[in-house]
Image 1 (cartoon, rainbow, N blue to C red):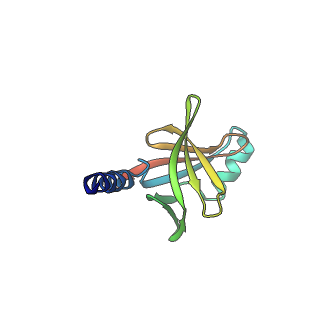
Image 2: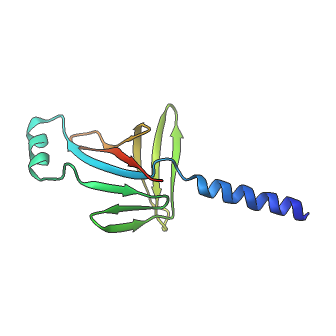
Image 3: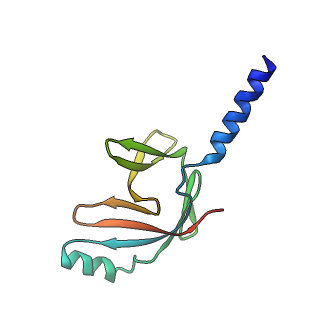
Length: 119
């Protein structure tokens, strides 16, 4: 019985340490397929902002937002990075590739490109 409990503890610790695979530093780019909105977004100066995604938090401009969980969800052929708050509310970012996350896609979209992986 003790061996089984020990194995479960080791497995739990290993899974917890794995993370979601998107930890790192990202550069934010705002854009639009509509030329006027694209120019407005670029004039607002949001391009190039640095965002850090950790195992259960996001840092933006020195402000840390803590999440209950950050995980990858598959839906059909698409993958999403899901940010779950303590109250159960979720925000999902589409995973374009292993270093790119996209939110939106309508008139305005936000793209996060990883510039540095977290050690």
